[in-house]
Length: 238
Image 1 (cartoon, rainbow, N blue to C red):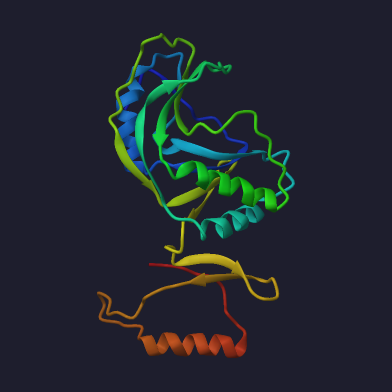
Image 2 (tube, rainbow, N blue to C red; image 1 turned 30 degrees about the horizontal axis):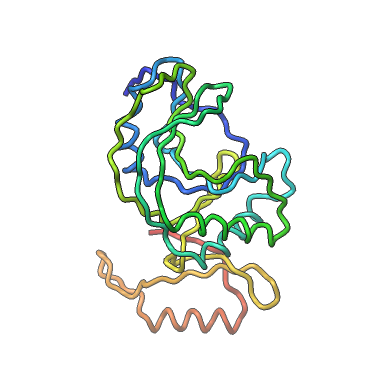
């Protein structure tokens, strides 16, 4: 679909922890605003609509790699619960970037301030030095436009949105951690500090080919791996 505005496609070099809108929701929101901007605007693509929780600098300047940051994020996320709230209107910031006035969609959640502060406290406890130039205003940037006119509005209806996962965006790479213990897969460390992956899977059922991996077979496989210490490589297929 062609739009009047320029959709942002630049390479990303920043590092952030964010909540990304579910794609179906994001596509519906984008359909409401993408034709409201002229050619001078830089519009956020639907699959990049997000609410930034924490900015961690640039990939060229950090001393931490994506693996270390994601390990910490996963550890924190397992102790959290999904966030509930609602999309609640469109606004703009008075500050102007080189691309123009930021136009955003607000997200209203009573749980979010404490949730975000918990994330800040956790990363600081790991030794990260965080810099804050502004207070925390939950928002999802829709576009930057140099031609914003007072009184101009985009009507995005209120919509209940729940976030069940949090994302580490490291440049253009995204790493997703589920909130709470709802994930069947997570990375942790054993008593000696060695990294371990854990998969909770229920494969004891007859598939379409009439084959079955029984619970007994799964138990024997676990016992064999515990006895030999050979846990093999992580390979996943479906």
